[in-house]
Length: 162
Ligand SMILES: [Zn+2]
Picture 1: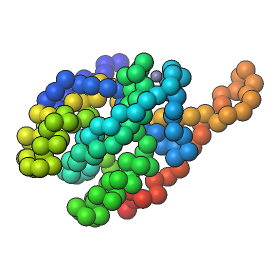
Picture 2: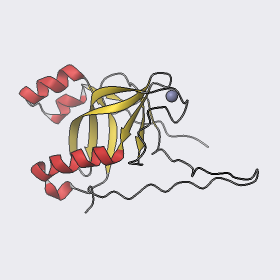
Picture 3: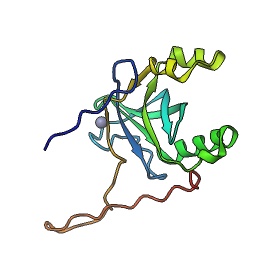
């Protein structure tokens, strides 16, 4: 099977792996992939909202140094997006979105004082090195050797909806 090469979006070198946590009660103070303790990292995330609303959201992710992995909590991201788009463009609330990468901090700060064209901002974006699909957890419990533990279904979005 041939795998299509992921098109690069931002102009800077890719940084970080990224995962979205859809479980509001999971804080991931330890990494779901390697079990090391996670720290925090505050970064402007670059998010593309369909059809054409790019936005930079300053957000504190969980960060696993061992995996070089950022984890964002989906319900928090959607809460911030909803608050922001109530002002900017309420019609976009509930549209599909994709978290693409991080914005270079210096450029992000300058852009607040002196907003630039979106095309100019693209040169200041680091794509993620790798974006995992949303994290899925299995239900805790005892299972026999031939049993697959069932996946815990994450709750539906409550705010970022049409
Ligand atoms: Zn890890």
